Image (tube, rainbow, N blue to C red; front, side):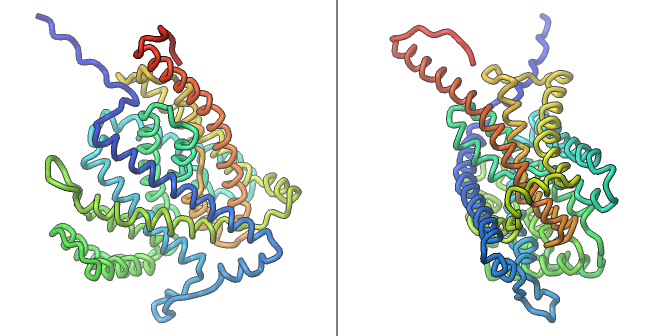
Length: 428
């Protein structure tokens, strides 16, 4: 008897029920977070372009913190270095869970979104460097700005316009964004650390090790863990490595429940506990203090977008990101045993690839690291990130809205067929 060859796995297949339920829960939280993020950004932009713009800049420049510890930082710096550490802590918990207990523990399932995420970083970076090749050398520092996908914004757009789209698309976007965050963390650590002080970085391993020991023992007491986390963050900040990396390192020490253990693990507990703080406070405050850049009216906006750096960022987000994601996905499906799920069409993947061009939180952060907070280039980068993200959102919404309507008609016809009223044959 000849054994049948094993069937190839389905690209964008739904995955486990527990994973699907978790994705739905995250979508609900990120939708609210996306709305708050947008509100914070709009408020910052409105204030920065109002008659009270000096008050906004004054607020950003207010310094707080102990000077003896070199932590007398401006509010803008605290938002980027401190509050975003909470965001990266939650992202790190999510990432670890995906690779330890989620669908990404299966290498075959993980290969597709990982390849898409990697290409979604390399191609926009190449587009950026190509456009800025004729500009001054400083322009090249922003090559990583258009490489990041803002998960809160992207999921919020998808949730608003895509209620009838297959859940597999949402799962893929979430997975791609998680891997995208990891790549952003690596990029920040390797390419945007200018002055490294080894001793504070080595000293940070002590509170990090104690934190790891306690969480491995199941300790949840905030009065023990929070001071250790703050000390690790302070030492990483003093080392010259961007302090948000401390949030990721702390998250990677937290154990994840695996198998049939009863109840959620400590990683799930912390993620549930800190996600509202990240989505509801840390990220919106960062957006409020970072997105406020004087536009100078329509003429000023048009003039800003003629700068090579601004053009490169917009092109990287709107063209480079979708081309990278789409090409990698198609190549993996073409040259491996992966196959597109029978419920999806490639136009769905195109809409999702364009949606991945929404870059905001991490893109703004990298822009500040590349050119310096408040610099002219930083302002141009912010304008470009906002413009490119808006363009990507509108283009993706146009495509996915049409697809959503098609899937809605199929659902309605299938329901009518099940009730025996209308025979139905067709596809999206």
